[in-house]
Amino acid sequence: MGNYRPITDVWLLARPKVKYYGAYPAGFLERARALLGVSLEDPVLHVCSGRVNDYPYRGGVGPNDKTLDLCSELSPDYCRDAREPLPLRDSGKPWPAILADPPYTVGDAEHYAVGGEVLPEPNALLRNALSVVRPYGRVGMLHYFAPRPPKEVKLIALIAVMTGYKNRVRLYSVFENRIAAQAAQPLLPLM
View 1 (cartoon, rainbow, N blue to C red):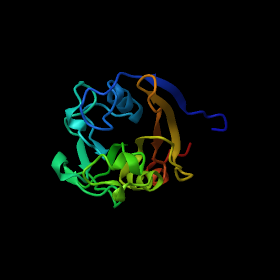
View 2 (view 1 turned 60 degrees about the horizontal axis):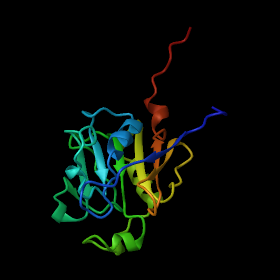
View 3 (view 1 turned 60 degrees about the vertical axis):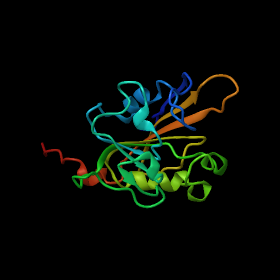
């Protein structure tokens, strides 16, 4: 894979339709899910989920998706701190994919009820997500910068996400878990 290059793109999307600070731009979730390599039926864990369940477009949030957020007022499936180890699925199996959208700065985090003192660090959040995603499963993160993955993890995509003039550009990074993949790969028969 000496010549491998990740997918790179720029998405020009409409402003969010959900009235919530930091809500996803319109059209983001459908595109983000496609790069996670999962169908709408596959369970995805939305970390720092905010009001993702209010997202108004089909194809973004699946019927088996779960949410994790520290703010109990948002009624997440898992009311937990994203800085702590993330949960496995209710079945005890790893997630096919995880999508994280943490606050980007302490200033951004102050817009939420839990405040800036619990701001998850992106590199640590990525490691937490990779520890509960299946081999070859993917973790996507929307942030101002790309977190640094462990060397066994493959970078799949770096996408600039814009919502018009005079708005900050965000970066959607997608990583594929290859940490436990060696044990999960089937052995080829000898010829």
